[in-house]
Length: 85
Figure 1 (tube, helix red, strand yellow):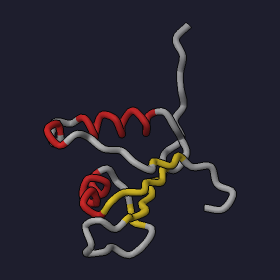
Figure 2 (cartoon, one colour; figure 1 turned 120 degrees about the vertical axis):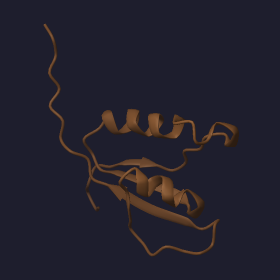
Figure 3 (tube, rainbow, N blue to C red; figure 1 turned 120 degrees about the horizontal axis):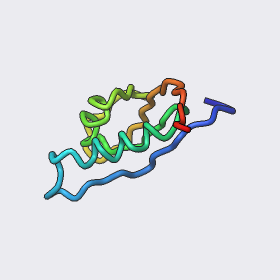
Figure 4 (cartoon, one colour; figure 1 turned 180 degrees about the vertical axis):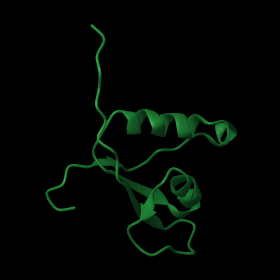
């Protein structure tokens, strides 16, 4: 990743009472639709399944410690923007 442009998400958290309602997925989709650069996520282990479901792959070995931090990455496709006019 040296010299590579990336979007780096260090923390993304949805309040517990709103989890499972699609807000995290919608927020991530907004970010993903806004970039063609790879997205790198720093996340606690307890959010691992969410990021895997979003298509991320771990950059390091998984840990059994729920509070440990994981780094995950997702390559984005180049999108062609067509403007009406």
